[in-house]
Length: 424
Image (tube, rainbow, N blue to C red; front, side):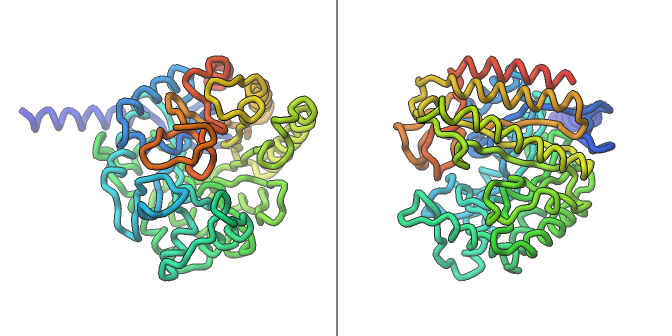
């Protein structure tokens, strides 16, 4: 009897699989089920870890997002380092090259299975330029006898540029590259332990993403070769799913070594991504909101329009997959007001929605980030193992950009525009 039930379960899973359609690119736009695919999504990078630490909360968070109409989640399927690795989400998936935490694999399986139930799609990030999940720098350190990583702030005497140069060594390190390819193969060829569906055959996954915000920094030639080679490697393993870079776009700092147009020219990259950070880039000061907000909006609009024009030139879909802003007056109190945030979210969502009406390439937007019912242990705290997972990564003060379950005014805006975009 058990065998019959199991076979019926597999058959139903396959029928459900056939009923869903992979997200594709046709004529420069995202398409799903034969129709243009637009979405309002969020960054939910900690979903895999939450599935292990608090499965019940994961279910509640997915239900909340689903009820809001948030149907796309940008998640991460990689983290590197041991329990002593600073500024990194813990536990990690890979404590040393090839040595994995099986619980986190099962957490990833559960996350995708629960998303599938809600007809959500996932952008699955495979690496990270920044240290909050280990990422490039950890691979470089491993490949060089565990040498010390020059961590950026909040590390004592941390220097962002020094860290960026170190992280960019990844593109030229053959050993690090090989280990990453091994990880890619392990993820892409996995069979979900919950649904029994191979990842390669699961339309819940919209796209594989090379990394979070990779930058050429001082190693631009190797960086662009890495984009094409790595995306091509994924395509050979899995020709059904889309591949994206995870690019931040043409940031205000040329030293970052990114060129939105050149970086996205590879035939192995299916769609374009860019990020927008008015506060991080010094365009907006929450302590001088009245003075700086109007100019920040002007710069943000110009920034979006420039990337849209390039996507049109490339004739590839475009997603603004990261944007955010602090609570009023840069407060870290979960009960503080979010008047400026609500204005800003409305501005960004309306801008993307309006563009989606006239520009086929403009496809989606993901806010940063969903904090849900998680709360920092204290104001301006740095995350430690055992703390609630929220939307802010471990190296940042917790609660900076997180949208909480009680931020009802923000959720109303999210729901309004999710419904508009979903109904396109």
